[in-house]
Image 1 (cartoon, rainbow, N blue to C red):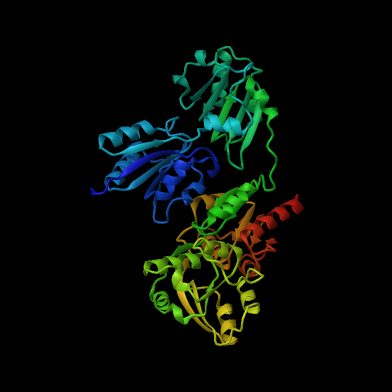
Image 2: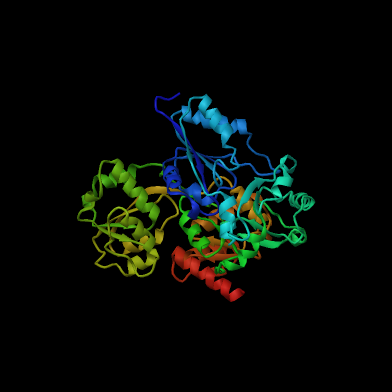
Length: 504
């Protein structure tokens, strides 16, 4: 029991991508201390919570092992009584087939405070994003939403008289649904549409009639799917979604969990399906002693060099923990490598004094804007595996470089299950690497689960952000198929798009 009041937020995640999340839901995710989420929640949403937020997957998927409802209720109550701010994230809307009632009853019984936050239900959003209107002045004056999870409990005679039907959880029972409707007076020529993964880049729509839709979808997994039945399905031709450059491609992103959301968003905007496989974990350094000593004598430095967003974040986080802010950098010039690092620095109200023309550390030495000799440089960097060449070249030119560990980048203990499944079943078309370390860690993680690495990767495009990363790809994976011309995530995305256009 805690003296602090906890609260549970039953939040609707909407459908598909983060684009359909409400502002209220986003605000709560940014402040969450415990996140308890369902299986169909978009992985991007999981990156919105603070780093120290406890994330618990309690998703229910048909035919697969799932967390019992009583256990979910217990988790909600326990963490609330501990004084935590708990977000219970449900796909769609929490009160539309969201099993929120038993959770609210458990919270009420335990005296826990809770709040409901609506979300866009797939029953409404999926047809809309597929271009199907559920109402029309001539074709549909009403519609009904139902779950076909237990067909025997439904009044099919009554349902058959409703203009448009929206059916959730009906993929496995499609033949039975059609048979029940035909037995109760619906025509074999009745239009039907099945929308799988509504609102996601890999959304698919199958359209037909009650007579032929089963044949059209033979051997196709129809889960998760929304089924729309009625004359309004004919109006779908009024809506057309343009094909995006990476539509139909599944991309594996190997960045750290904290860094992947921006890259994932870039790829999804181009139509890709993204599977995240964190090959890095960013943590505090094993010791703060070096950085703390440097912060204590900041006035001794002429330049501060930052080569990554992680370096920026951890340096300023530690600066603040020592009771200081950006004013303590007065008189120190700042050099950064890359636009991303510069943009991250801007969040602290600072503009770099120097950005090398090429987004690699070596270019920083070649184009340094003043005499390096007798210059004292502070270089907060990753604890191991960083830019030894940069330090060596600066030192050779007469600079005094003080390297301090600002953070450490380590390999996760195991490969993400979703990522391994996608690779094993050959669902991945492209693997992206944004640093040499992600290549090395990917090779290490994959080597733990298979001895057939070459066979699994032979038909997959290997995409690298730049020459240094490519070097490790050649050494460990044997090849590179795509290398970005501009060494940024945007540059890597553009290179993948160009590759796809040339290989089609």
